[in-house]
Each structure stands twice: as C-alpha cells, then as structure tokens.
Image (cartoon, rainbow, N blue to C red; front, side, top):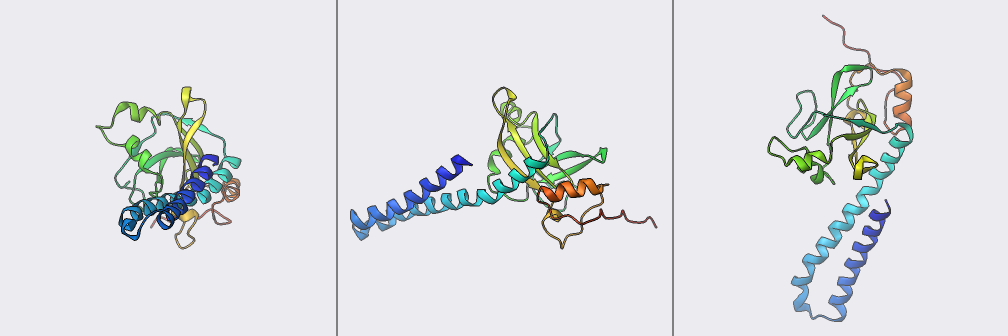
Length: 206
C-alpha cells in the first residue's frame, strides 16, 4: 500500500512536471513530443488510484480469513466449463464439500498481466510457474478471496490479488448453492461480500 501511494504521488508529480516544462521551457512546437509522456503518466496514476479499493477489500478478507498454502492448484487461461465468465482461473476446494472444486475467475484485468505469465500453459517457463507454487490463499472460494505468490523462502506472500464470485457483489445474479452454513455466510459478509441472509436451496430434482 505504501509503495502504491508513493507511485501515485510520483506519477501525478510527473504529469504536472511535464506541464510545467512545456509551459516554461518549451515552445508550442514540442507539444506533440510531450503529450505521449503526459498520457502515460495520467494512465499510470489512474492504475495506481484504482488499486486502493481493491487493497481495502483485501484488507477486509485478511481480517476474517487466515492464509493457507495450497499446492498443485488447478489453473487455466481459457474459460472454465463451470464458470459464468471468461478469464483465467484457479480451482479451489469447496470448504463444505472438499471433493468439489470451485473456479475463481480473474474478473478484472487490472494488475493481472503478472499472473497471466505464471499461470500460462504447457510451454510456460517452469521458473515462472514455481513463483505461484505453493499458492497463498485466504478467503472462501464460494464468495471472496485473496491469492498471492510466494515470497523469498516462502516466508511471506507477495503480489496480492483480489478475486471474487460475481454474485458476491451483484445482487442481480443468483448465488450458487455450495452448501454454505449461516456461519459461512456471516463470515463472508464481514469480509465484504454481499451475500444473502440464508444459503440458497439446491434445485429440486424433477
């Protein structure tokens, strides 16, 4: 968070600095040369600013769920057959039914390029894959979670990324029935997910 704040201040300062240089030291003919750098600074400042809401959500998740080390986590870049959305994904075991796996999709592309290179496919560099093995995981895959790569000697998480099921923030989407107990729902609610008061009932067989 500190580094993100420093980056935000730095890019904003760079943007205003370029304006100052253009106004004070350069003639109007240099505008086409300076504008691309100003656009880059503006974009980078926007990316830094967009990180703060995700960081606040990750903080709430980590207050309610402990870190776990998960090995050999199934992953992929294409659409998961059980997911509503396209995108790369991890499969995490359902806490209520360990034999059933739940896909967690990267619904937002912000800050996900680093993960794309490491989730990869069969030709991905093994050294890159090893950086997310084991995978640090905190949360409930039915609702909301944080994943992270392993730091040096696997002593601390790094590259934290916020993941969630779309139904956890969009009430227009009916939540799936994954065997959540009232305690599970309350814990997810404390972590920031917008979950119903009661777990949805599974559909009746015909």
